[in-house]
Image 1 (cartoon, rainbow, N blue to C red):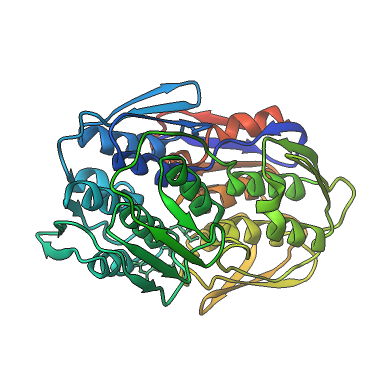
Image 2 (cartoon, rainbow, N blue to C red):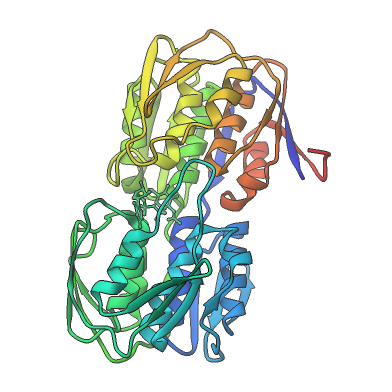
Length: 421
Ligand code: UD1
């Protein structure tokens, strides 16, 4: 297992290019199953979750080829509708194959994903959506088995905003017979990117980027090409890295419009942030960070995928802040690890109370999940001395060469391969 060794206290400086969005790719790749032929997804990030999703659809009979960051998927040979446990357990987003397989083949057998590091993360809304479209669903031996002669359009109103179930339902509804309405649909940019691909494939969807989506089912779709949107979590993580090191950086190939909420919080904390076209610049060189409360919420609110990194930043800000996660209420496994660096953070219900400390000091810390790992890297960048972030395979799932990007910005960070941890 690899680890990162970080010598902290180097202000980041320079320009970095933001990669394509992991969470968009994880929906776009299975959407290719809705048709036969070659779908091309440009700006696809080369990271482990994308490789796992590619492996999964390869298992179903598709052929995936990467040319740089263009991912070409040929689905003409798809002949298997079973997503096995050994792949699904690695990545919950595997559930995304349920909708497309049911819609196109009338059958899907998908392993139940199970829990994850920060709680149960159910898939009931995915299953209920398929039932609403007329599928019969049985749970047998840990698998969801779905059958449907032809899915039928329906009105589905989600009790809560859900990215994954909105995406799955969209992918099923585009080939269902008749009209589907999704109320309280997720408005995350990654869902909008999925709608762009589906529309390019010939789907009829209205209400794009709104909480009410209407879909008129079509008989078939055709292969298409779409560009994956920039990764807003990677971008916000890099901006936060600049803030925590009192640095000054510019990001290009990003979507400032997707970053309004984290940027507003960085500005409240004292950083100077500006954007122009597809670039965002942050100047935190001469600032004293101020404490800023955050509560996560669905887009356009503050993303839960930035909660851990925000806690890291607040741990050295002047004052006390409260960071509340309303989406994943117990996603705080990074807190004890950050405290090992000298942070003063306590948890009460679904909130972290962060008392800013004057300095962090390096230590060995353990990654527990993807965004937790990112927060530990930020902690290490800010800390005096040496920090070792162990088990960075979590981080490799969702960031494309983060340590290389940070090194190019001047950070003193090295990957040590195959360490004992
Ligand atoms: C996606 C993102 C993840 C992000 C999360 C919230 C991908 C691949 N992953 O995950 O990085 O942290 O959105 O922005 O895009 N829920 C249910 N039942 C369900 C589905 C969800 O109760 O069937 C709950 C979840 O437990 C959670 C909330 O709904 O509390 C939102 O989850 P959801 O938006 O579905 O998250 P994911 O799509 O799994």
